[in-house]
Image (cartoon, rainbow, N blue to C red):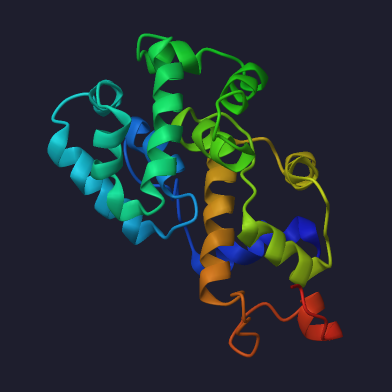
Length: 218
């Protein structure tokens, strides 16, 4: 299988996933930070707390909380003190735009990414997740699953995050819906078959470097 065929191959296996990342625009922004170093079940528990506490605009609501109050609210997501600090930094930036997400959305992708990356605690994966899923601008999200699948399936490995991102953006049409679904398909495949300890015998992708050459992607 060629790298250019990866999207079609994964879609034939897992079907239509659509946007994949759940929630409103505001919830996606928050969950992009909450999901760092934890699983989605824990993120959802924290989001339940947030929805119960904040009846209106959750961004303005959370922005008014102290760091300690916020950490208690998001405790189920783990690393809650660190994440509360990062969320406060992110919310302070959003407050500079008067919590008007349409104003932020009006920024071009490069400027939006630069501003997000200037926020303490917001790395490239988190920033790109917010850009792609919350503001729906065509940028490809790279995570550990992406790197694992590229290494194992195609023996592709880079040193820098943006090298992976550019590979996808230069190979596949820059399209929001495509990138959203593609990222979701990669995550689903990594969870189902291409795990830390791969389930190669069950994997429907036969033309895989790892299988053929017997080399570990770890």
